[in-house]
Image (cartoon, rainbow, N blue to C red; front, side):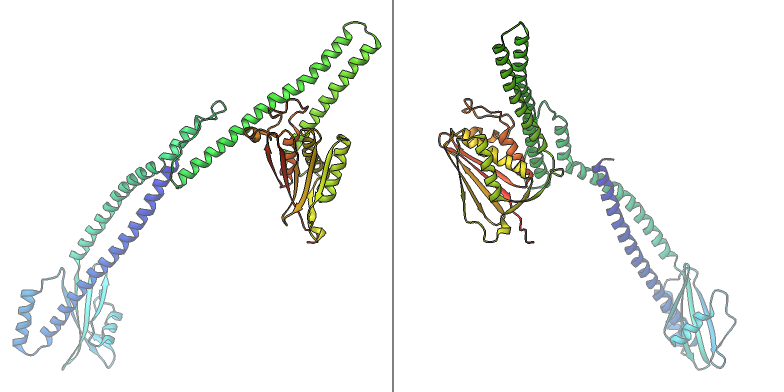
Length: 460
């Protein structure tokens, strides 16, 4: 069942329930008012009947009869009852008929002149106690409220028919309202079904509204933007990875085939083996980078986490860079460290975190031709911030957004050996450690890489 149909049914049910409760309330008070009006008419007749029977003044009696004849209509099945009450033994005479219960007469005596009403189905009773010189008498008038019951029956039928018709109208209006309300969702659904891997450029039409539908449209378009970027990055990764892996493999196979094509001298074989060794080392380095890059895509649960002191970690990275690039000019500057040494620790995996920072330093040295590289470390209470500044070739501004794509290399870096894996690997490692990495660069002036790593308080 569609949501708009469920909405229509729910709207109809709630509205109909409200009208049912309202109708029952109205019916109850109208029925009560009709019975009260009829009881008052019976009361008037009971009092007139008492005057007729016990009034000694003939003129007054005739006047009462004239009033009754001219102004009081005869009620349906109107019937009078008169009983004498004997105080001595609290008995009544004559014998009570079956339709008049004794407790009703007792209630009339207790009211002592006040009118007491009773009802059995459609028949109403109004009784009062009349004190006469000859004794105490109970006068009761009863009648059937036929007109009132017919009126209530018609009202009940009208209300039921009105409710049923209203339910149909309410459902139709609710369905139309729901259909108009969910029209944008149907449009979104139709548009979404057209989006596939071949046309990820398609976007939903956005409006300037601030309602939930406009917000949903903008959120969905942003999601498609991210999916398109990820899809393109994946395609580029596969294409570039296959190309980069194929290059050394082709060189290895070519050298091997050349060496085996005919007998050669020992020097020729040695030269071929050296070339195979170089290409194999290149291939091994490339595969290791790809595996490391893939590993950083996990959530890090299988890694060994420990408390690491950032300043010590930075000097360990410097030693690694010295082994890789003996002629480097990397200088570490420690800013004002926290007085409390427990606040310069982070939680992470030593080897891969060293690898991330090392990749940044090696790139800084490589693309600046081993010019001075400054490494600054300071703390802001929440993060330990490592800033790496070089004076190298820089990165074109329009290409900065691609630097975290695997195998991407800047257009001005063709003269430098590399695979475009180091920076994406470092970015993933820092992100795995809940940190941030930002790159600012100007062509011909150099690049600044800022790494922010969350610190922990070991005293807690």
